[in-house]
Image (cartoon, rainbow, N blue to C red):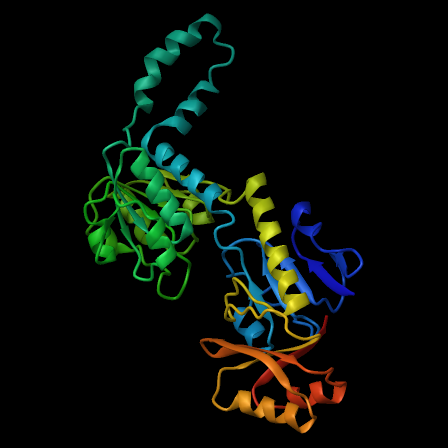
Length: 389
């Protein structure tokens, strides 16, 4: 029985994909093989030796100790693209909210109860205070062209905006999906230089932390509107405050409120609603359940942030899945251990991602427990599993 620990509420459509006869799902189980979560911060958690996989029902993994998992041979999965449409829709809403006085106007009308027949006249007399601008024909810079960025760029084109995109690491898949009407920028500065709007869709890394700072605000068009539905920390709050006070940034929309931002004028703070739709939570749960099951039951990996994609069609009744560091000669060492025990390798697959690798061996007959332990002792091997089909 494989134990699954859920650290956040996971949509039932995903949990139902785990058969009851082979999986036990709980919010309190000890020594789980799988942890499923959304935004729960598990960075300081002790990782049990039993743990095989961590499944993040979402894209960002800043709340997961990925390096620690890698060293222990624990595969960390995420669900890129499963919540992309939800974030895209909120980004389009953010464009409109930043351009029109919608929020202030709604708050004004809520101050009118009790005015009776005066309400229509008061609305007409005050509506000019909430007028804004249309987004059609304006220039939008999309920073980061993953699944979300591509969808935002394409939708903005459909809305009549001039769109320029920048992503030095754009994938072939994203490039194929991007509208031909999206211009390509050679660098971040070139993308934002003449933009009326800037929307950020990059992960938070050491390179992107605080990347929107005084240096960038000094080159943008005065009155620019900036949207950050990616991660808090990408925009430097102190520099943003000064840019707003100096009229450089007309509005900042973020899905990641903090104490500093709540006290700033011209900042729209959304309470992390990017992926908070029924459809998004369902899609993420179903996607992560399928990925985790494929790994637990067959050793296949898809959409891992710390290990490579691996898939080997079953050719025998016995499979060894070995997680190890990506170093020379390790495959021959494992093969030597198998040969000494009279185990023949029918099919094998070895894939690496950075410093870490996964090797799958379909073998002729069932290895004993002592053999599995012997492979565990090979230098830089972190975890070994025997699967019997």
